Image (cartoon, rainbow, N blue to C red; front, side, top):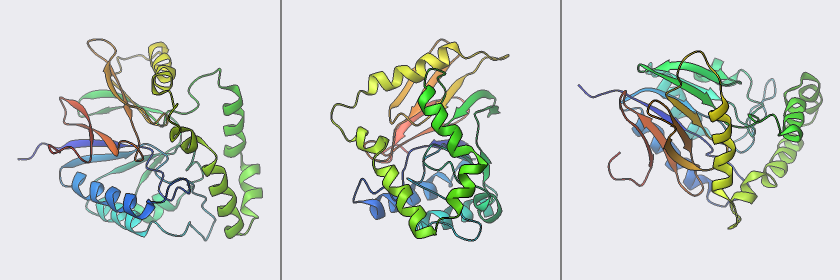
Length: 252
């Protein structure tokens, strides 16, 4: 019998205006979902799967039909998919739950997966010293901001959202001076100071566009999920071993 595995992926940024290969990247992502579902116990989408998403009451963003259809197909087969919203897809509301059968999370979770304890988060807003970002995030999460944005015509709303997305982190990541070590240490500092009643075996996060799988001690590791611009990466856990891989690795 094939051993069941748990998959984690983040920062695909489908539809990003900062790149010109969105259709090709989406097809690769759908192929990844299809292949992962062959032996998946569960699939965790750890945020920023879309470069911008705003969900009006009766309107969702144009496009992504391959991705949405594949997600629905997988959950219809009884394979759970969990979605942790990131900073680019913070305005996903109930569409994924009602139409696609996905379980949504907006805050970090600590849960048991295949006998191990996991800390799961997109990875943004974890540091108290990021006061400017935390203030901005609180505005985006507020009902008042969502109400006023909802008054915009969808064409205008999506244009504004994609314009904002283009000027955000993706442009910085494409900069050759992007300091991955500095980005990694920001989340490393958080996990080293995180307090919980039980031992966390794996801290799983995205957001920083850094690909790492590093031991913190004999019981714990930090796993950062990379992205689908540079790495085309993901993490997979088989109940014993955690690995980070790319879609180009021959052994997956």
